[in-house]
Every structure is written in structure tokens, then in C-alpha cells.
Image 1 (cartoon, helix red, strand yellow):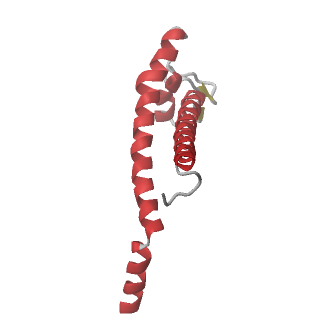
Image 2 (image 1 turned 30 degrees about the vertical axis):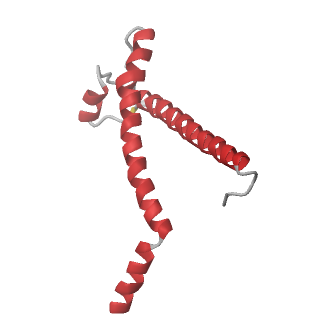
Length: 124
């Protein structure tokens, strides 16, 4: 049992595992920021431009009975297609993908600048 604990400790203390843990925590925080950006800023602006449409409330009831809101249909146990929430998730994905592209682009640009300043020798 002791050797398993020592082996686990060595595994957990490796740099890549710690980097992964830090990345996971930062990714979770970034997702919360992105969620807020989409739901609190972008979606209301798009809704204002489209006459007050809130994407999260767009749905299609798969029942003959129609419901005023998605919540009412779900409470009644009716199958629904919540395409508005899907649209919101697509917008969120595009924002995250663009933000990650900008981070990678910036890191690549900085790496090229460092390489140019050191004439290709990163130790100088």
C-alpha cells in the first residue's frame, strides 16, 4: 500500500499533471466568463436587434398542446426541441474558439519575436 501511495505522489507531482490541473481550473473560470459574456452581453444585444428575441426561450413543443414557455412545457413533461439554447451554445462555442485562437496567435507571435531577438538561440 505504501508503494502505491509513493507512486501516486510521484505521478501527481509531475509537471504535466500539475499543468493539466492548472489548465482545468483556468478553463473552468474562463467558461464562466464566457457564459456571462454570451448570456449577459451578446444575447441581449442580438435580442434587441431582432426585436426582443431571447434565444434561450425559443423552443418547439413536440406535443399537440402548445405552451407559452419552455419551462411550462418541461414541467408538463412534454418533449421539446430547445433550439434557442442550442443557438446560444453555438454562439458561446464560437466565442471560446475565437478567444483561444487569439491566445494561441499571440503566444506564437511572442515566440517568433523572442526567436528573432536571440537569432534562433533561446539560451542567449
